[in-house]
Image (cartoon, rainbow, N blue to C red; front, side, top):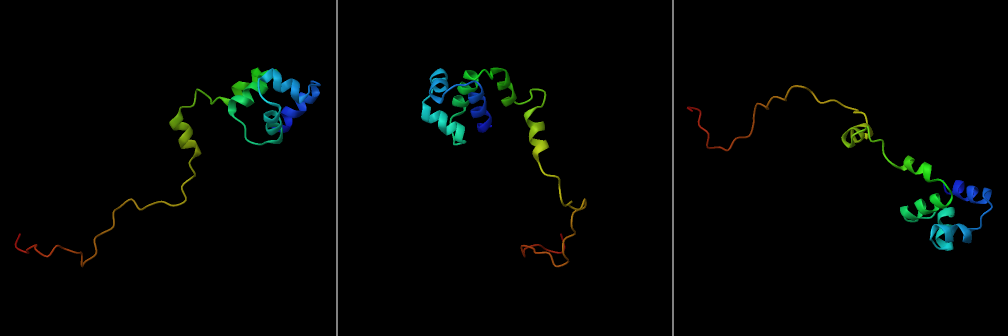
Length: 104
């Protein structure tokens, strides 16, 4: 994406200084963005608006028709194993406290 922003800037025949000034950021910040280094999200938005890409900002927003819990369920991996439906029987020599009596 960073390369695409730089290519668009060059296509518009704009210098880094010009674009940075219009976006309200420093030239070094724009250089970091174009290199792919970490910048704040609002910096990316400012640069996109300055490049005339505000129509594409909606691509960063999640689909409102998909609820968060559905999105969480979709990201889970498919199960690899299944557990038995019945519980396991207790072993014959099950542990006891020792104060139980046989006469109830």
